Image 1 (cartoon, one colour):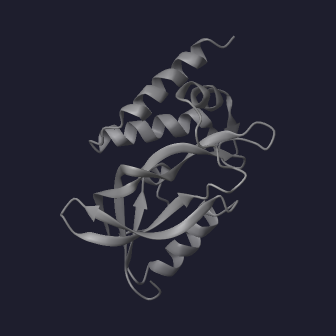
Image 2: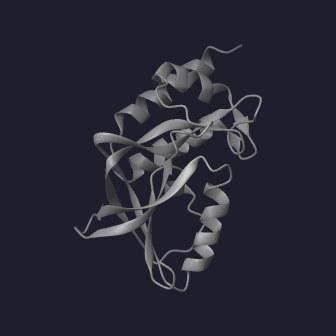
Length: 182
């Protein structure tokens, strides 16, 4: 996509903190993947001694993930790519992929997506919601508490009109786990 405009798909923290200039933003859907707390965070929302969990796109048959597509102009492109690679590829647990998303206006466009590498040591697929809640309630890293990441994402999904019952349940479980701590 060098020298051309392109789209970036946001499904987690990019919803509330993109950190880059974009020309357009639309609701979008990615087929075949779901939003999942399946990546251990040892940099941003946890530490090597006490990893947190962050969201990743995880492949799953029949799944779909609703999020936001950000259109980046050709002029913005080099800076946006450099920024995203520094932010998202810090530990190589994400794979950078070009996947097709459907925009709210009906167009289908290729978009830059960050997908979990299920062979990477930070992959934590298969954790139950209670296990995820326990980790998220206790972890913190360089960019703050892990639960703030979850709560910000849930709030912005609601603001965008995106219904994600699993994320809402997880947020309720984290709040309960925090109340139970001394």
